[in-house]
Image (tube, rainbow, N blue to C red; front, side, top):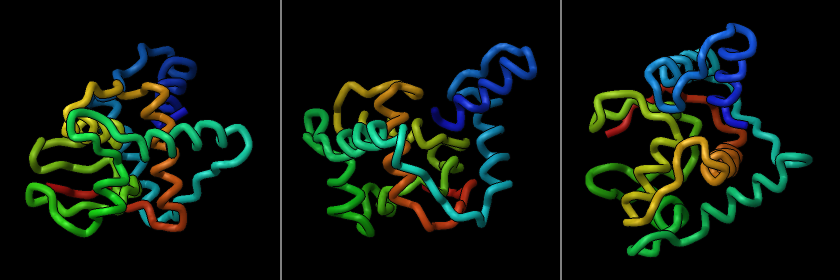
Amino acid sequence: MGVENYVNACVTERMGLEAWGMTSGDMKNMLALISMQSRGMLVNVAIDGTAAPFWEKGKEVYYTRFGQLEMSCANCHEDNQGLYIRADHLSQGQVNGFPTYRLKDAGILSAQQRFVGCVRDTRAETFKPNSDEFKALELYVASRGNGLMVEGVSVRH
């Protein structure tokens, strides 16, 4: 379950409202608020117990090559981290700065929206936000940032 799923559980079960869209303005505003309130806290994502099989699935997605370009997340964020891709600095593949305000999009993007863009850029059919694949990938990538401080809402090109 990702943060968006927790938010929607609260919205529907406690507030009695319709679920927010995973990439709706309300959802992204709430993600930004949660991130700002968490700024400076250390990332501490559990990957054992019931989370372990989802973490393994996320790791598999991270290292799987997709699309016509046959690239995996690791090809950019491990093999080429610190270099540039189209004038944007390649990160080490952590999500402690998400959601992020992306100048190119003039708006807030969630980690899963960025995943959609990355997979699309490999010229592959992408998974949808809130898919099991992207939830597992977000868990794996979040765990790569264990010990780092939450920095969201960050700003990127």
